[in-house]
Amino acid sequence: MVIACFWIIASSIFTYQKVFSAHAIQKPVYTTSIKNNITMVGEVNRFKDVTEGATRWKWNFGDDQYSFEKEPEHTYTEPGTYTVTLTAYGSFGHIRDDKKIINVQPSSVVTPQPVSVAILGPETVTQGTQANFTTSTVASTYEWTITGEPKYSNQPLRVKDANLVFTTPGSKQITLRLTDPEATISKTVQVVAAAEKKTVAQPQQPRVNKPASPKKPVDDDWNVKAKDL
Image (cartoon, rainbow, N blue to C red; front, side):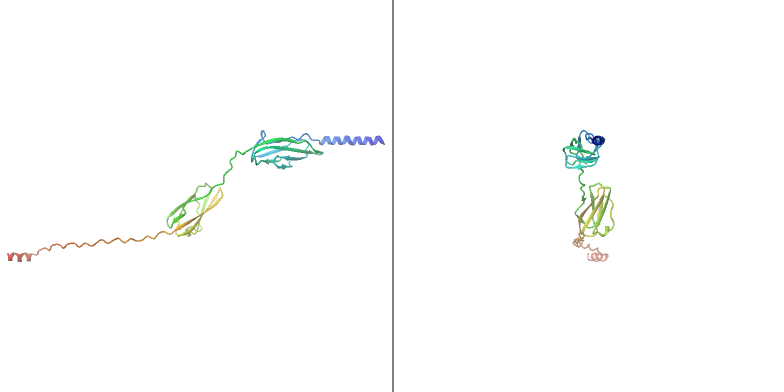
């Protein structure tokens, strides 16, 4: 009986050791898309565990960010030196960690500045005169709409340079819509009524009386004068 019990216990230990050996994993090893342990801020970095026998994973990227995937991706937002740690787990608990030091450098990519969009043109326009409005922004399409001017009601202008003539005085709103980049801007223009043209009376020239022409003697007068002689 004692021998039988000893044999059963020994067989169990042997079986346990055999199972443990079958599920044992090696020291954690992982690969990464980071070359020479140097990456950039904003760059997507890919990690992959290649540990034999691992069934669970914990990644610590050194910036208070974690992942429990086998092949995670991570992006750093600040430059600096970070220690990336992989903890791999097998069927019987966790194994030693694999660590790599990553140097994150400032991004060399220039961050695009927001597009500055403005309507270029006069603030005040005289009624009946032409005024030019445009924008310095290069876009795929342009669409002008004018509010407060019957002439342009429901008639958008799809040109970059809008040459406008206002027929009525008052405040007008000019709106420009752009695509690629997408933007909508407005400009208020005050139209001033054109001054009335007054007819200036021409000064009258003084009237000059011409001297009377000498009276031409008639033949009878000559005859009388001849008799007197």
